Image (tube, rainbow, N blue to C red):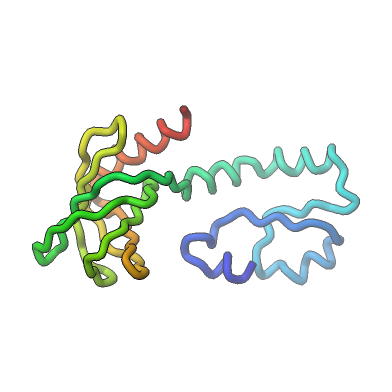
Length: 159
């Protein structure tokens, strides 16, 4: 729980506790448990708790959903370097890429890609994480073109 709450990408995740009483749950209060299922677990109480918190879960899902999709991505780095990568996952906030090219953290990039029913879109971003041969690009919040990606993801989730 501590790792989830201290992680930038998971700090707002919904955490359910199971069992025990309120006093025992207080030991974990520093982790911000959102809701507690009491023991013995009874269906009416569990359904009531889930209904009371389902909007938190939906918000979490919508905020962080990552759609696994592979497509060719044209990358242009701030220094003018151009190369091709392939996408791993995409979300409304960014995309993970696979490439053998070297990029450093915080490098400004412009990426261009097409997604099934979405015509080619170009979005500015910054390299936010890196692993061997893969990178995360967070879309620039000031770039209005990222809304096209968000609409595509919303449509994808509804179908």
